[in-house]
Image: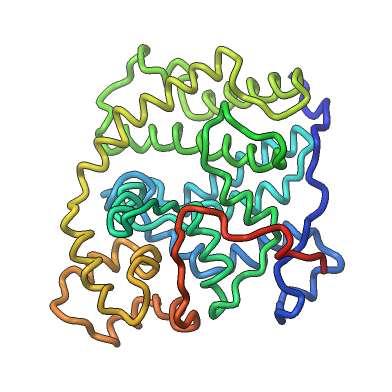
Length: 344
């Protein structure tokens, strides 16, 4: 199939960043570089939350093999796939790549199980996509925030959701990241599930294996279906083709057969002990717990009392100390309005 034959509606510019009054050290590049490229390369990629993803579970907690994905390696795969979609459909790949790079910085330790754990502690929903926005604009750079473009932040918040229910009043680059995220974790997590013994043998009745014999064939088949459907409709779409329906079956199968089983391997008491420890920090325990890596939680869970030097050794205070008494009451909604942003 010949690609790049039709340009879809492209997000060409930004509404702006949050504060002109903020002494943004990246301002040097604003006059001659794409704003979303700056978000990706000088802001998100250099953030502490981004680097901490290396110590957070993608699916399988404490794998014996380093070949299993972490949250960071998953993010790299999402960025590549989001770039593939947007480059071939004439969308803004800089925006999609920035969103992809930051889409999971709000993931807490132990994946979605950790997210459900914090929801119970809060008594209301905790969403990693909302927490990512909070981290980016209220915690990073000593509480001053990364000062990301509005679209990058909104795209990070909106990367979660169903493939069949996308609101086209938003930039299609948001949807490109949503598709890339799901394609990445379904196919890569399946490979890791086989590696970790959750899937015992190949089975042609398995909906994932109906999409191809290996990960590259599956990606090729899915993405050609995306391009074909999108070209016909004149907008990014992946819901009507036979391949889209097979992918939906594969997605559901992974949640039933793999993700639910992987969560059972995590000792919930480890999360409880880690949370009790961070309650003695000088910071909001929800925020502190959400930023921790699993290695740190395992370490804290073994301690009988708080030790300031041990806490500082983890590096967590590098993010938290500059924040002060930040109050966050809502960890589930997008916390900014367009009027809060302006062009530089």
